[in-house]
Image 1 (cartoon, rainbow, N blue to C red):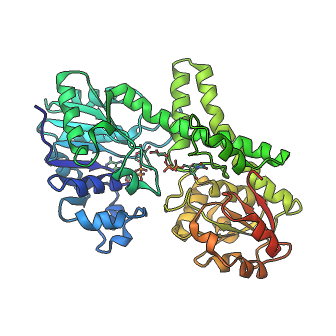
Image 2 (cartoon, rainbow, N blue to C red):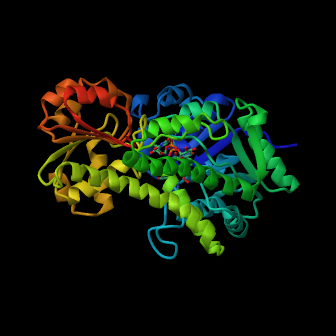
Image 3 (tube, rainbow, N blue to C red):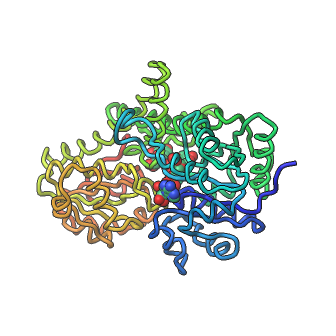
Length: 465
Ligand code: NAD
Ligand code: UDX
């Protein structure tokens, strides 16, 4: 008989921990769910009486939090207390690319994972099921188990891998109706019993046939692989977008033509200025690193090409702006519509906008940014974090606006970096009338009808056309 879970703790209240636990709490009112984080400001924001101010913007999320918070969903900085109380502990902390030491720039930095394992080992007094929710290199569970078993107080631990497949911008939808939930566990009877406990939690709203169970290593590796396959499709269509631009083919038409083949499918074939987000690049680099560390050079080179293509797409978009604006953007104003890495999120990690901006700032352009959900402080943080120039210079060259029409006023060109729906509804004639002439639009998301912009008088470049 598996244990019936009544108390869950989740370490890490970020883009995964917050929404995932909010939905578990919403769908399982009989389970007390406590989400803990070291970041006090983040926890305070999750506890803001006005749920519109929670730190993660996702359509539908504030309503889920409003329903469950205070009932069976809690956000706290008291990590030890939450670990002690819980029967099941999710680890949902960040696993960024290493910025130091061996594997720098490639491997996942597992220091936050190790800290969590050590903290659980220190605090736990009774048996715990520890669930890896973070995306981890294959065989990480072995290290987690080692730490728990060798530094703990004789407590029994079961480790499960339960990677998260939600995409930002559609997180609530994805969590409510996932294509699948993946749970990996040990093949021992104890491992299978822990696995059954987690299956039971999800089965409160996810049909049993959508809950896949595997061994630990298959589960860990499947997550990296799923992201690599998705990113590979974006790089494939982006590679074709460049060829389309040279040959007169239209990438949207090509994508439709190939995507209607049911073996290929139509999703993830949208050419863009390049994929961003906290996952794709990090996870592929990690996959490449793992393959190399097993001596699998061809496997590593194959996947690395997905990243090389993505970097090329971002820099060729920026180069095209410079070339089109008569080979100089020095002192010119370029308006950026969008800074987030995709629509319907306030997340900017690895957003293509940051890299396009950086390239144009190197050419001494002035940049005016408007994004409906990204605050000014985040734009400066992203550019300063890149470290190409000092913060004062970023502040002089970049201005952030809360009104798109003001951002575009007197600009020589507009670059569309995020596919926010609201951009389509703008009064483009009004925007055109207030810009320098000739006025250019560089549509990196192929969202605005180029014929209507051309009719107004814009010179339009659309990715892949
Ligand atoms: P995030 O940076 O938004 O959140 C991680 C949180 O963990 C931070 O708030 C940080 O303060 C906290 N934290 C770190 N160490 C801690 C500790 N020792 N104790 C308490 N709190 C601690 O990251 P995220 O986007 O939520 O991603 C988390 C994991 O999920 C990563 O492994 C990521 O690859 C994976 N993932 C992310 C997504 C996504 O869309 N963002 C999707 C699937 C999987
Ligand atoms: C991704 C995976 O989709 C998700 O399953 C995983 O859990 C986390 O990583 P996310 O990064 O949040 O999710 O968003 P996603 O929709 O995958 O988009 C990633 C990037 O690819 C975005 O910059 C998006 O604009 C870009 N993209 C996506 C394209 O350029 N073209 C496409 O056709 C699809």
